[in-house]
Image 1 (tube, helix red, strand yellow):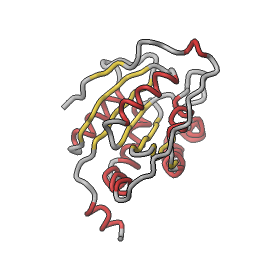
Image 2 (cartoon, helix red, strand yellow):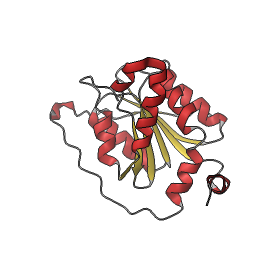
Image 3 (cartoon, helix red, strand yellow):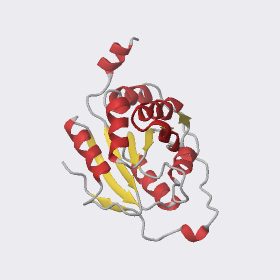
Image 4 (cartoon, one colour):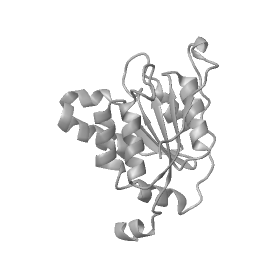
Length: 196
């Protein structure tokens, strides 16, 4: 099949969960999450949930597990850098059964045109976690817009078509281990109803 055949066979809309990872973002100031919600709604996709969690490995893993049960795609923003609080990437990589290195490579290529060498600070990653595609992007609205406009917007339905046209083998995720158990919390993710 050609790419055009794939696009023709792709669904018109897909189920997408949005996850913001930040110690400071709230529903009121989460410009990256709001941007994704607006774009997904404009494209006619179904937003299954919108969650905000802190930069905490257990909270991130819990939120991803919630979203994976109801979404074909998860778009996350935040926690992809190299500071001590940036723990998103190890959590996401522990869930991936089929990494898609091209997502991170192309994202950094697009980012380089905008921010030059600072693009290397992003560890953006994407791939398949059993039955769900996960794309982890930096937290700034500019970075999220770069990933959406340059990579995801026109390929989202095609990606879901590719994921679902053959049965995916179920592969157990790697266990999450923490070097500092005190990072655990009982608060869990803040669930925010999707904006329609």
